[in-house]
Length: 279
Length: 277
Image 1: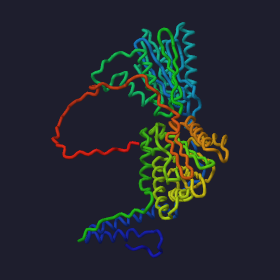
Image 2: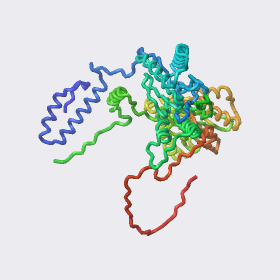
Image 3: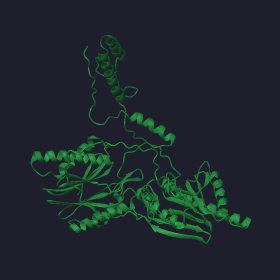
Image 4: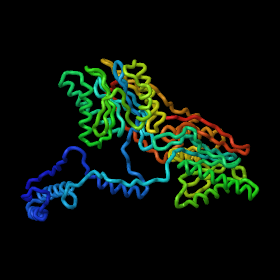
């Protein structure tokens, strides 16, 4: 393989290719080595030079456009469980952003009516606006229809409110928990643009991926055999919710500080607050 | 015809061959909605302070992978030599391997000189290695120790710059810890006061920074003695669960069971006690 006399970086690649062709008839292995070396040298020279042969500048030091994001992620986990004659909506009370904590006492459950509580996690700004809008719409409904909205009606309304902002969504993961018209527990879970369904239990927010499989096993009795499928009692449900949040706070940095549980029964809404890890 | 084995010559250092491919893959993966795997970082609070008789180093014990806790009790204070220890923040693998390499080289150096290693030597070795890798080794270190010239404390940044100071903090919780230091640091403190100061600085990081958590480890180095207190303070205990989640036998369905007896006879039996300390 001949290098040009100027000792520069240009290559007479045609000549070298020709040489390897001649060699291939006499010794296959030697030709392979030659081709490999040629390719390596070509690669090294290509990396060092740009298209015009001058050395490439690796450090860009001009102005860079930074995109403004209208959203922020404030963390938090919500959980709702529906029982035979009760419903639970639980959330942690930590509000965070990046690596910092804004507040240790910012619960994510909002009371809508005497029989319905909504849990909202995601972008706190949108959570606040959305709950304001829901409360206003509840009042409007009550004044024109002379009765409070039922849980199912609130769920249907929330779906239309969220889809109304389909192209600039509310960055909120909602879960509604309450009692339906027959007095049975109901849970409705939403995605940020309004798709919803009625569930028995659902976890949402930052630790949802950790909690949901655990609930599938303990409440839905999934992946278990030879177990007595007893319906969930209120005491056992509250105990389970406390335990799963303790586990979530261990592994998710956004979950912690305290846990607030809203227990909805026909007697009304009762609140319980349990401390969690503060680190 | 003789067979020639092809040995590809790799120049030393990092190989950047895969960077272009990784950039393309990253763009494709993000389009599909997944995220590419990231190196585990410690997301840490580490600090050190020089007091009357020596240095006190402190660290939290949480290692994070993204925003999930990967290790609730990892050890961030690494051994360099009998009189020098080093706390590490940044990429976990980088801090671990860098400190081990320098510890090994320093031991050989110490045997060659016949003297106890100096903190300035460890500092030089670390900064020269990190500068050689131009910041690609993501290790931010707090190096402290006591040698023949007294107690010394250095902070070492991933690109290779170092600062020799009486008190330093590093990691994502460094601002919280430095706030405590700036409030209460005095020169020539007593040992108990210095330990309390470092403990409080790490606690500030643990409770106010999401990347730091769990327990507080301390390392008190004086002339001739090292106290490695792990844990010095269990600042966060795991919550006690009220329910029992043990599964009964038979909960996991057994589909098939095959028993193959192995006919063996005992030829020799010996007992070795394990050091479980």
